[in-house]
Image (tube, rainbow, N blue to C red; front, side, top):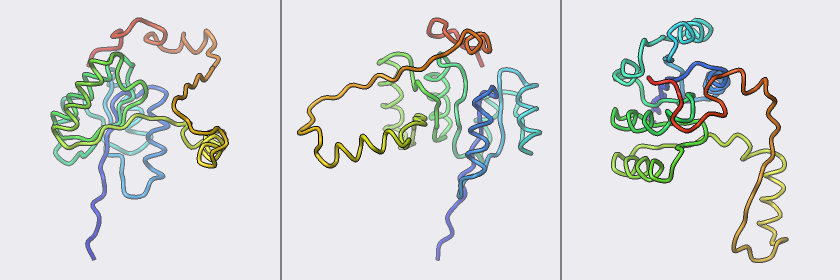
Length: 180
């Protein structure tokens, strides 16, 4: 019987959401968290210490690690497209926090590059398996809404000023993320 290879993943961006990714990776069979990097090397070192992983000094250093199979991008939204393309160019699969990109042109470029390289890019959608989503999906499957030809969804989330004050990039114009 052929043994499956364990997928080795690194996290870029060591802010608040990175810890959730690290915990999820730890709990998932068949993958292991190898290391992390961040705009702030101190925050990368703190996450690395907590999870007993490597802290790379730069994203380029992380991508150059030949043992790494994938990256989880947990950086400000304006950095996502560029960092996805860098990962794909380095031969790495990508898990990215939403939004994947800020423009349709960026998204088209990412899709083209993923198709060209045969690598996977997926965007976090943490509510996809929530109880409410499952109920709606069951109702759709049962035909309770008739023949659906179009749908629209608006999810309203309250974010306090404190939430926006926690990180300088939140609520800013596209492309205002911290450069790596």
